[in-house]
Length: 263
Image (cartoon, rainbow, N blue to C red; front, side):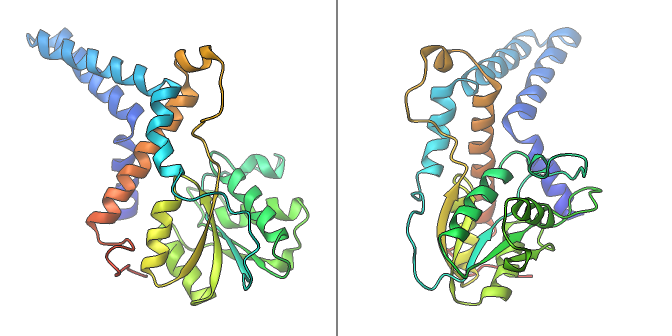
């Protein structure tokens, strides 16, 4: 119940639902009350925020500090026996191409995990993530099937399908790898928070970011000045991770506290 409540409250605090609620409150004030100035203020504020967060320069400026915390892993560090890929968005439809079941951030994570697995001969590829909703297959198992469809032998894959969030993923991976170093693959914007959980659990993760989103390379001028849901999604990720790191700090579950919880 607490997990579900956390997801619902956190979802409502993301930019799009939050701005819809604020704008809706403003419209109610305009149409149903005499508080016209307050209503106009809420509608204007909601519209302006939605506009700004849908522009590439604003959205990627918010996201870039998170994604620049760790560079892309290009080495071949000795002693790596595990490449751990954290779970993300997915669904499961057996009629689809396997990779179509990995949505949002998941497919780039799996692709990077496979690349790193192939650059470290003998390593095991570990996927994490429990089943979501009424899906009969877990996030970890779905990722495993995608990897196998791309040529990774099933014997080289380990599925950890119990963890429901990053803290639980750290505990589950810790039970598998102990104190040995391993590559930790997740979205670049999620990696700082994930590293906090894993280091607080006493583990030795080597950061391996995937799915970088904030664009610093050249773009056409119209891509910068026309609002787009793509850029709003980037702002959403920045705000989501900011909320997550604030909660991590408040609950004392990051590397700075040195006292991560495991369950």
